[in-house]
Length: 462
Image (cartoon, rainbow, N blue to C red; front, top):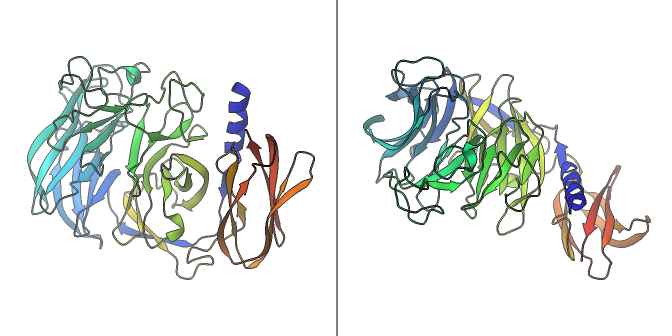
């Protein structure tokens, strides 16, 4: 079994590719921010933005400040990874004008290692300013426990429940059911706890189980997102071990600190993508817009340390619980430090750059080669599923019209099947191979298109 896991992991490592041609442009929408962390859109297109030190501000998309929605600076503990973090606008804002903010509240005196509260607060929005604050969640962090891994973004699910993430400071916290750290939590917008939460027992989070827990075993789930296709939940978890993208399911345990990355332990859910340590995945969305149709149903995430944005091709419909391949898509200006991503109503992709204090807009470049979502290079994706029995799909992209062949070979190098042997138009194509007439084993598939030729390995297990 261990050998099989290593084979699968090796195949997953082959799936990363780099795209260098630029088919987008980056615009500055809001500037002059100081350590901006997260943002969300109001129905009229205005943007509400959190700054780590405590100011929450609303801007229009012409870089004009509309208001200071709320000022936490006199009570916010902003140091290392603590501060004013996540923000979410109520999905029924027109009828329920509330905004939800996650921040770290200091408990005087403020010294290194002091106690502090992790808080989630709702605010009624009146003329673009906050009023009537109401604490929905509060957790006291014990003295001397450190000032990292607050995590903390907030998103509504399609069930109109409020989900938010909390990091684990100490290794044991993520596995404990009587505390919120190292978890994704789920509450009602009024702060009450849904009785169908997986660890609900008595409705009191301070006795027995913390009834708010939705998933556990996470280290620092800085951000997460829901798919607009089927409401699947994905999380970016980072820390000292391998950084991961997790497919979050109700009541599942993601292994920290017992499992870091892919470990194949049936007691824990493995990540759907394991990256080199230090990638630091942060903001993420599943794209569903008109500006970049080729990204539809792709998971898009940012790496805060490198300023790169990656696209992940999702597989296993209708669950979309696997990543077939991932590649670099956008490289932001130096020092950007992206921490949050949102899709605007216009279909463009917006990014919060903590390092430069900006909200950026990524939109199609009208004059770019490869625009209109045509591939800008040739590529051959890893087949999916892999291993498979007996049918698998193979996706490939070609940058120009031309004659294409896609052939299957056995381990002896003998051609055993031809899937494509014809002229194909520029674009993305997908074919399936039914191997019901072939024995279990290792096979190779090879794409030839003009001067481009690439071969990949796949495994048939019956």
